[in-house]
Length: 129
Image 1 (cartoon, rainbow, N blue to C red):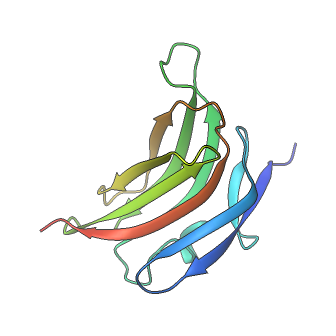
Image 2 (image 1 turned 30 degrees about the vertical axis):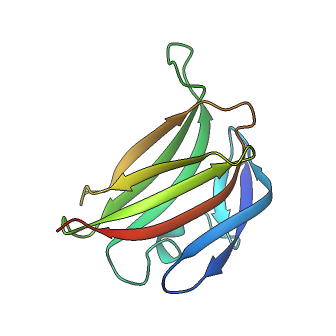
Image 3 (image 1 turned 180 degrees about the vertical axis):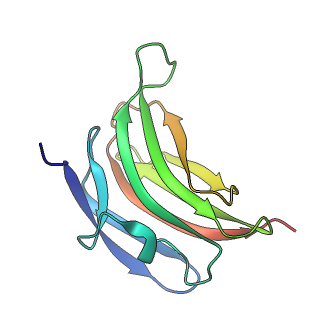
């Protein structure tokens, strides 16, 4: 069975980078940006502070108080700075995850929403010093 993919389109400059999707990322789908599901060459801020390999939206387990989980495979390159990811759903609500772990790991961002499809993903660097 092939992966379900939702393609986002990259925009931005050195200060702000983001990707948008008109259809939105529904549960069960993986993010692609400009056709690439391996995001390491896209979400890396051109500063080597961190990178993201993949993003998948899942329905949370029935035991969770949250409805949805974004699974983000990512790492930071230094403890001096965090890779900050922001996800906006169809209601306009934004959810934020800071990545400070320098090892590749799967990070989970859980949320509740009546319209959970993610329409915008943005990323930046936060200095931790």
